[in-house]
Length: 205
Image (cartoon, rainbow, N blue to C red; front, side):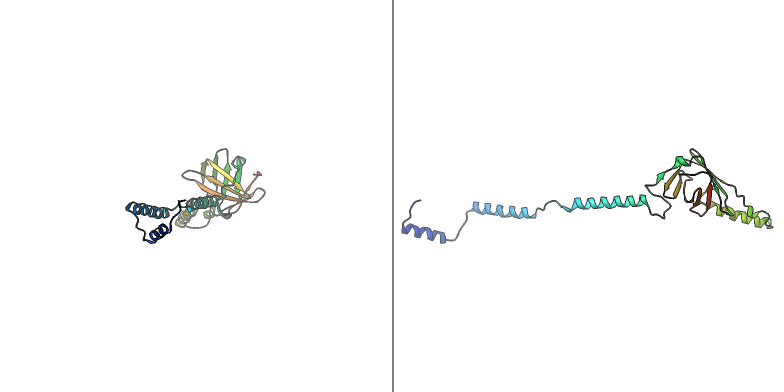
């Protein structure tokens, strides 16, 4: 290191005390550096909550779907986890036990078709002593009420029977499809969702 004389040292100190006047190039360099730092601060990292939000939405959707499939215990639908027992109902015959002015059902399940027969012919109207017009009015009322019943006479192909605990859900697809739930109340004894009681000679799974 070069030694300075006293005069040179004083001159250097006086130079340091002078105000700093940057050159035009130094000003440009400082300006670019400052604004680059500001721009870097404005840039934000990608939002971290987006994946978490998507995962939450997917979870809610999945839980809702599973809840709908499982369904409530008192619902007509037995839910996604009901066991298909259609094959074990092959050749089963069920006869209505409870008295009803509208119906006297026979249900027969064969390999691919459910047969529903209503042998009631409006016996309550017979021998009632009513006039012809009264009988016609009563018969019309009988048919109106009968049309509101879940089970209608006919042959229904492609039926399925599903079981969950002591509940059995009969489902028929197609234009005239329907769902009808039976509850097993005793061996070979069943009660329909409409309160009609049935019996069968077979032990069914």
